[in-house]
Image 1 (cartoon, rainbow, N blue to C red):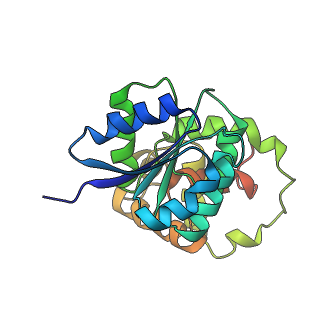
Image 2 (image 1 turned 60 degrees about the horizontal axis):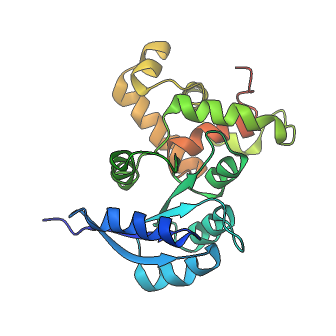
Length: 221
């Protein structure tokens, strides 16, 4: 039997934090290895408890979830973060994704949704669907500086890899990208893996964000 996934729960509200920890710890495939009331506690606690996944509130009084995510992912890129928010579309969430989080959930999500999200992130995928990610990026991309005409970050990609990144940014699935480009599904997967490696991306969410940030796509597309 595989070892349970090691989880860290971070929320400044004691009742919420303990409820989440109790819910997750009751699942045989999870074990909650620590709890924190503020983002400032996360790096040290993560060093001690070695979590696979951190479930973290976005808004906390001292160090919020965005900054805590950035600190954690810089030090421990192997630990993944799911951010929790009370708002459907939230600038803090967008910033959190840019900081290295693997997705976000609403705080009023069903328990089954949270459990499924943990499994999704553990498998190397993102919590957000491509469609939801595109909507999120489209909302906040206008707040970013105007990109360069030829972003240096994309020069490492082949023309076909840029095509795949662009279509990923538009919310297409791998099957839809294969149909659009007239290539095989496995070829799309191979190109997307190459994009992830060359651009040092954690998951599909961040591939979508990069497509917008670099100007490969604009919010109206």
